[in-house]
Image (cartoon, rainbow, N blue to C red; front, side, top):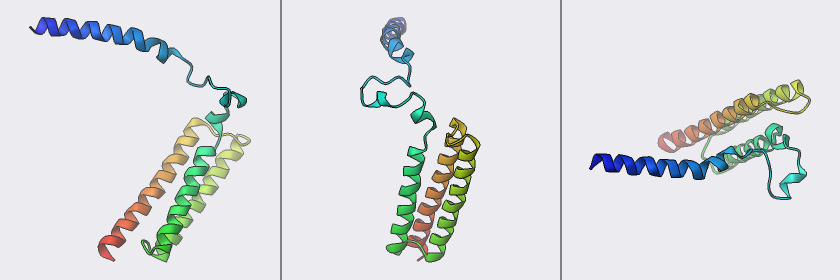
Length: 131
């Protein structure tokens, strides 16, 4: 019984591998639709479009939480200072490479924004619990 199940598993794995292999071998940076092909291949790899959107969304969330009384003015000021520090770090990274970011720099910047976002959520939860 176990031998039959093992054989079935091996056959299924081989079939799945032959189907998935061509899809995995494709270049993830090649674009098949015509609208994306107007950009150079490295445009999305080094741009700050996603980071800027993340930063703007986070700033809007801070302002909204303050306006709704979910965080105190002191907490909002502290979060805004963190965003200012983030902006300085982003500008420092961009000045190193004439406007482009490395993958590591994008990762660090996104991690910084995630940390600020988590702090905002923590501040909101603490205010909700403790007033």
